[in-house]
Image (spheres, rainbow, N blue to C red):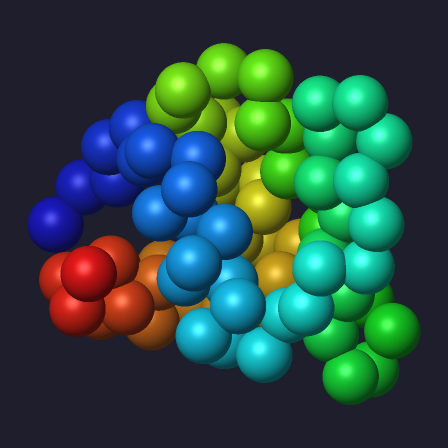
Length: 75
């Protein structure tokens, strides 16, 4: 299955289920942090996250594309 643009709120929900917690927010950028200290910045100024940025966020989170798509199917 191919990646498609994802709604911002849905992406944040998926990352929270994968162990990320909201660390802080400044303006339109939300920073999420996991238990290992990894940070992910999610821009919330747009309604959808495009494919390129989504791919980068998945890579930064350290999860596989298949694991992300599985979580995406649960929502």
